[in-house]
Length: 339
Ligand code: SF4
Image 1 (cartoon, rainbow, N blue to C red):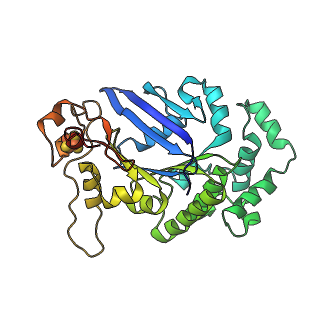
Image 2: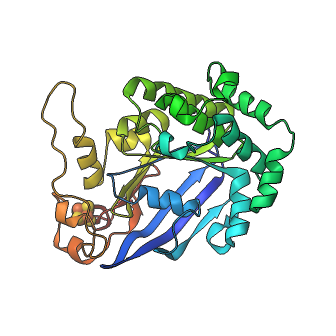
Image 3: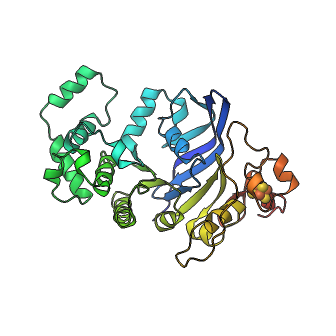
């Protein structure tokens, strides 16, 4: 997959949530970029802030309780955080698309596949419409159902003319996920954000969905931000990976470099946490993601880090270049001054 200009760039993104117990400081200076035609993985444990990052990009963060404190999200030259909700919706709905995590709860159970896809096809790229305009659009005779069938064919759903008459509950998990991928392709997006789209599927179905995503990425020349906690999936799909820990970026590198030769202690811990089929011991990482209301000082990973030093408890490590396009946020590298 070729890498071109940057299509998405995030700088210094801080997102907090107001809760009954205090301010939860979830994202802390997140930096991330996706190049044209690049598939970028965002990996980390559950609760590390991956989905909050995706929701913030998509402007679907619930506000309140969420608050964007600082940062910028540049997408095709527009800072999404400076646009009104309406303007942001216009930019994103034409060029950005999303595959959600749970195919069952992401499809409306009271509409057939054809009704839901038809609405999306009619509505795509329009400004927000009121209920009367929406009903008018729905009654209008158009070719949206034919387009829905064509999209289902593109994601290799057999008997697509029959499937559009079915309700989501009548479809298998893999079939529902294919429907969601078809919906994500409406309007030929430039950037696809996929939030753990295979997590709810068993491994054989997962394989088929991964092959489909790989194929569509090539065919449609998509750039992808692929969120997953599964390093095997990330190795298969991604050109480059960001490792996220407790709302911060720990490390980024080309996929093989990162997985074969991790530099950040958290990346090493994540890789050592993968259970082996041989039954050999796997180490894992002691402890858990910290409380975001009172996160650890300095490096957020320090209470769990086997290589912790005194400076780690006091100073937050910055992302520094360590060669080969790799960035690492760890005092082991900033104090050694590697470049
Ligand atoms: Fe561990 Fe310190 Fe590096 Fe954090 S900065 S990962 S605590 S060595």
